[in-house]
Length: 388
Ligand SMILES: [Zn+2]
Image (cartoon, rainbow, N blue to C red; front, top):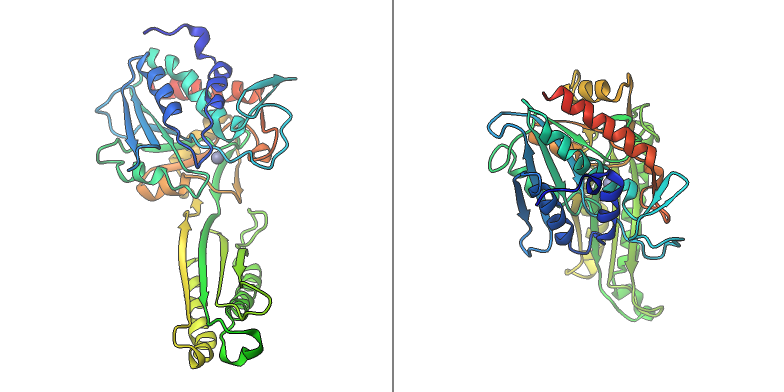
């Protein structure tokens, strides 16, 4: 099949991509199949990396010399956050153009970038690239950068290892060379339930949880005071209790209490020290009095998700190239998270640069300016020139 060039404009492609409801808890297979067909129409070979259930797929494709080492990876996630509970003035899964803005779920985060990359494919294919350009499209980014990990594991094995990876999260085409990394834990406290008139025979799990939370608050304050990096806003690692659930009724001593907490860590923070300290505190201060009454009393602290913070290495080739292509001379550090730290851990030099503003990401009436797509297209054209 050959493509009608009008089907390859970034707006036309964004219109297609937004129409696939790829909210993280749903499948992304239809979107990936659309992308695969589109790439195949330009003779680009596609590799699919499905999850075990087969309802989510990572896609990897290479344009240019197949045997060449390195090259540039263009990375983006295909999933979007839910629209539940948000007041949209337009259908979130239909791209709507108004006053130079394009509205739709994922328009900024980050289907706008995917649309620009796909729209650039005919241009990439028409050039005699001496350095390959690899596309890495992932799933389940929005639930903790989970989906991209099996694809990254295969870099340098079944999949090519790029020298540089551009992660196209919305930075308004600014060059982001550092971000924080979230670590998330689930804490589960088990006590013993008794009638509240016999409180001395029970173990109150909510009370024990509140002591643990008190210790976390002290750690939060210490983080605020100690490790600081003025490039970030706020300039320290944050620690917050994010969810809590416990107890069954007003006249029962609660047997269980579960809560979650998150650290948004600066690069220099050892996050494992946080949970170790909480466990030590539990062992020393909470569990002995609990177990004196009920031997089944327990406190379990489990790391449920961790995305490494990202800090480009000094003199990073990725940062230098992004600055050159963006015509920029300064970098930024941000507090949100991307897949860049994971690519960097695998051995690729990463940098974050993409169209649209993070302020519009995840919101009702999410939009991207058409102008941002044009700026990204120009960036990708300069990349093709550089890759010749
Ligand atoms: Zn994103």
